[in-house]
Length: 154
Image (cartoon, rainbow, N blue to C red; front, side, top):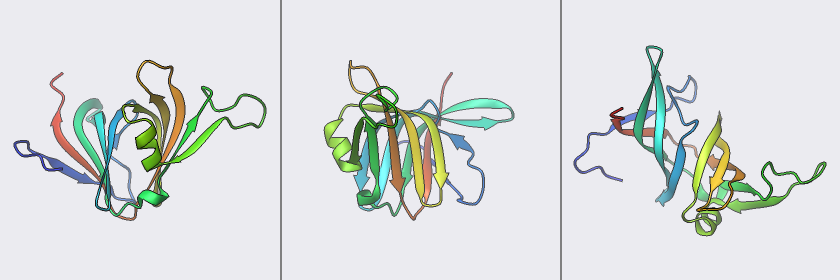
């Protein structure tokens, strides 16, 4: 996505070092597929500078992503288990998730970066219904680019 009149700072995640940003408490408001990239439109992301939390706005782009290898586990009960050792939910491709939950927001509670897999755990908020727990997996061999458009005014 081009930002016509906005200044965009790009930060590429180095797979060998710590990530300067966190998406904990961010909400993925929209997921887009563009060529071989997956773009997450988030309401905010965070960076810690000089012992201060800075709220930023922008998008996350995963380059050289394979949409067929990306998935979402959507749990039917709040934490996924209705009894001992039972799973209650469904595994969806990322495309199926976008079709089934077109207006949902995914609130990231936990994020993990493992090799070529990025895993987000959190809550799927779908309109006025109660949230359900979800685990999103994004597979890519390219870069993870934080496209920062601005810092929060507050």
